[in-house]
Image 1 (cartoon, rainbow, N blue to C red):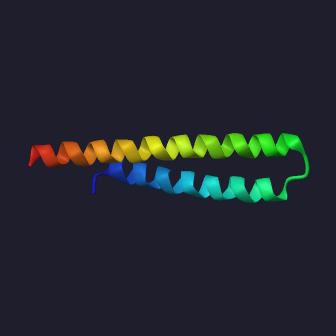
Image 2: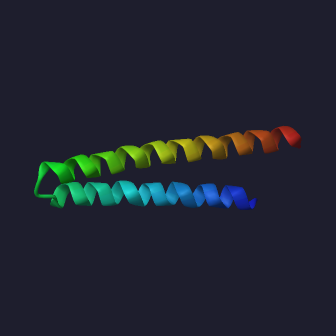
Image 3: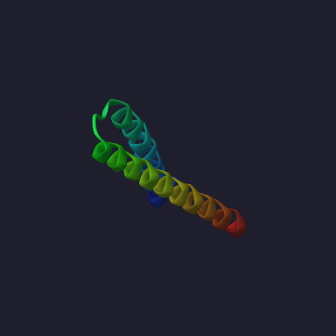
Length: 67
């Protein structure tokens, strides 16, 4: 597997971990500022994960077209 694809897969894993951390933090927070911060973290993680998955798919499509 290409190195850039490995990096993208690692980014997907990190974003998935960030969603889990945001959920945990949101469940344990005690004030509205924390709720907002963990909501922002979760939103960003979803966006990063979606972009990385999309980029991986474009790499796979491009590689298939080359064959």
